[in-house]
Length: 269
Image 1 (tube, rainbow, N blue to C red):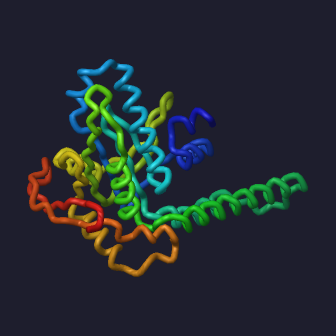
Image 2 (image 1 turned 90 degrees about the horizontal axis):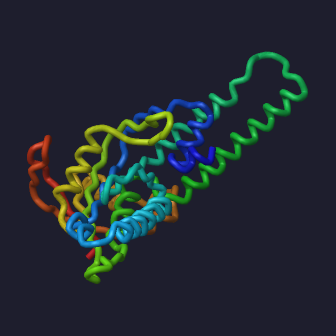
Image 3 (image 1 turned 180 degrees about the horizontal axis):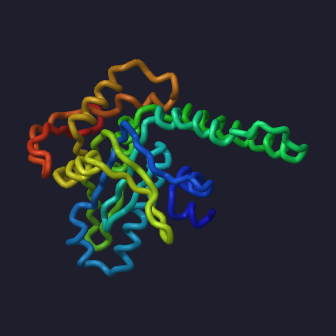
């Protein structure tokens, strides 16, 4: 179990440990890519141990930011970091299925020992649902706002290049839409997400600029909709809503998609 938790997100590791095949479809998720600007040039001038230590510090900080906002880290590739936020509605919809699946009991009279085991199992499920409800109550319901908060926190992170004293700059891209998620591998399991949404998010990052958060029109529309809607009853964390502003960038030629209207996400003016 410890090995699973070291390679997979906890909620995914728990499902794998129960023998479940993780193969999910989400109608809406927000995918973020962040890249270290000028990493290749800077790293060529530094000792390898210094580069590894710096990346470790940066990515550990990003891990903490994601955990705070209930955003799932997917992977790192070189100096690039990928994470995804799922809508709370997806998690809420999954819980009743989990409860039904685990409480299906044959229509026979159980022995005293079996009855106690069933009671214990039902109590564990009740506790899991209660814990899940508490977690949901302490978060923003929609993935777009949570990923926006994560992006702003990442961009505000301060790290310095040791050989120049210059600040490490980041470039971020975000898009939202449907994704497929699952666990791959047997010896070394990895949780990953796929789909056109992931590809577009990656393009948003690669066409972004140093120190900027580049977002798609779909994400911009979702953020503006949430910003203008009444506060969600799910969350006291919704006090963070509206701490950003969306600024049109214009059209960008995105590989595989053609011209797309995109936006910059920045702190509120």
